[in-house]
Amino acid sequence: MKKTRGLVVAITLCSASLFAQQSKSIQSNGTIFASEAEQDAPAALQKIFSNLGTGTSVYTNSAWTLSGPTSAQGFTQYVAMPFKSKANAHVEQVRAAVQYLGTGTNQVNLSLYTDASGTPGTLLAGPIVVRNTPLFFTCCKLAIANFSPGVAITAGIQYWVVADTPAAGTGSDFAGAWAFVPPSKLPVGINQGSNWFSFPADIQEPAGAVYGTIP
Image (cartoon, rainbow, N blue to C red; front, side, top):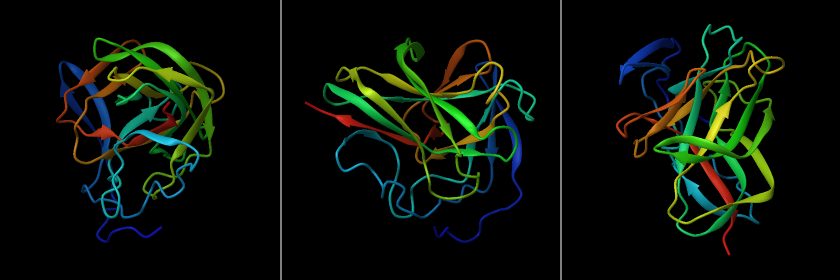
C-alpha cells in the first residue's frame, strides 16, 4: 500500500495524564495513511459501525499502546472501542487497526462487551485470538475476528470492542498498538491491568469497524 509522504521514522512513547490516570500512546507527526482499508469488507455482511476513513483519511500513524502484562513494554494496557448500531443486529465480524511492535507473540484477543456506565462491562463474546497482526507503521491491513454464531445487539445501545491479551502464558507478552482515527468523536476505553476507565471525546479513538446482519 502507498503511504503519504513525510512520515517521521522516530517514534516516541509518551504518557498523558487525564483524570489522574496514565495512558500510553505512540505519537509521530500525525501523518494520515492513504489507502482504502475497507476494500476487503465482506460482501455478505452489512456495516453496523465504522469510524475508518477512506481515500487519504483511513487512520493515522499514531496509536494507543496495546501491551500484555509480560510484554517488553513493562506495563499492561488494554484498549476498547465503543460502538452503537442504528438497528437491532447480529455482530459477525470485528475489524480493528491493531498492529505489532515486533516483540512478544504476535497475537491479540478481540472480544465484545456490554457497556457499564461508559466503560466495558460484561463479556458478550470472545475472546477471539487474532494472529499475525501487521507491523506498526504499515498500512492498512486490519486485525479481523469472526463471531459465530452472530452476537445479538440492540439499536441505540453502546457496546465495546475490546483488545487485550491473556493474563499469563502465550500471548501475554504481546507488544502492539491500536491506531487512531481522526477526527475523534467517541471516548476510548483503557485498562491497565485492573479496572476500565474512559477518556473524553477529544482523545483520538481506536480505528475499527463492526459488520454483521441487520434483520
